[in-house]
Length: 476
Image (cartoon, rainbow, N blue to C red; front, side, top):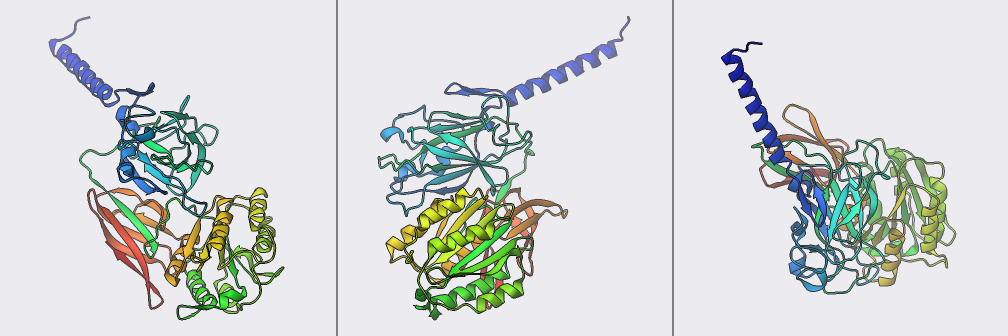
């Protein structure tokens, strides 16, 4: 076969071009090995951004930098050069001095890659001091799935038993485990790096990114709080709620804030309301169902105080309230004291969870800071269900706690009017290309913020505050 010189030159050009392209891909995907684990996509396999870090007790400054957990491992293994395996090349979560302290946690995000289920192990957590941490993953920073425990350098985790084929995850949360009250100099889990076996995602060259964060009322932002389809609010109306508080009584202040909250709960959430006061006395004022704002407000306005504090009894009644209710559930318990009717509220909380409900108990300790025994009991009620405890020493803190418990969603639109992110107030926000965006917050009525500027390598924060009964957004 005769081939013209021009055709030969063209063929050579194509071959050379393909070779260069392939060589470029090989460089782009050059594998790396750290402590015996080979990552086919190289250093892009590791977490890129700190979403949230909560240090428990006794984390010394040199070991409290969460960015030490970003990028590839650089500590060299367990028992590295620092104290007891802790080193500035890693971040420590700390330990709890007592059961009323918070547990340390760290939430990281993969930006230019994703965690997916691949053959073999999928996630590697490099822990420098052998202290265990619970590991959870999330696709949106809101709904987290527990996938195992990390304590080695590295700890290998196979997520296949917990996820569906094709799912992609961006967030990893590591929390100090309940059994490990470590009081060494290097306290709690010490994390050097987190790597994912999953695809590299396209990040447009030359595009700069910024971060958007939308906070609830006040400045409190609780990371990774899952929204629920069903919420039961349970309010203490015992005699102590008649005590003077700020400009009124505790009950009057609680009623005022609950009335505000009713207008901020998004449509589509099933809501119920129960009160309790007096041994063996509790009333289901609004059964769990589609939110009737008028009925809910009427019941709140009619509340009166009186009686002892039957925490165990009301938790047992809540178990009945949730019977037959499907999907995820949150019980929001607001109380200003501890059990005074000879019940065992911790056992009742465990029994509630043992019923098999997809349930968390969120507990608000209302003006209990000076009563350590009461605060500790309320916090333990939350802990046995995997829920959260909130202190509310004034009306602003109570408002924030209840706003967190009743999640409000928001949607971010780009300049073309396309939805690019849907989130919940106070939870991890999106990393967006620099530009202008519209943000719609699903309060009632909705708040519309047009032309919100996202700037390169900066965080833009939208904070909500209340003024004269209205919710006012502020962009910083």
